[in-house]
Length: 166
Image (cartoon, rainbow, N blue to C red; front, side, top):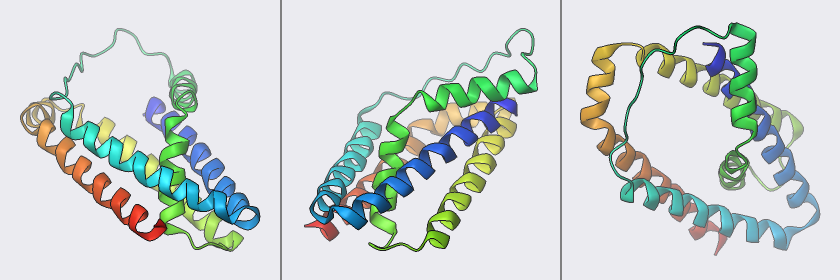
């Protein structure tokens, strides 16, 4: 669970950067905000199309030899996710679509807290579930359709953002 917690902490950090970055742009540069909306919508559509075009996901869940310890696992998960700047682009796309132009601080903080809670819950749940052989077998069978369903949802969200921006 340490790795999952680290990944969630980093994702929440990226979400905060995206949320406050979007607020800053909205407050000072309205035309840039519209450009970010369009870019974010296109990015989500691209991720969705990529999910449709991707080969079936492979699953290699062999148990690692030895355990790095909880704190080292947290640090590893955080470092992995902090090194992935695509996450800030993803959160920027979402926040541009969902938060109003002049978002009060309390609403931004609530959005970030919700993201943090969702990230911890999701990654810990995935860790718990995928430690079971039955879930691994089910995912091997359904993984392609799960990816395509998520891809369809991302295309729809991206299209909604583009429709609102244009």
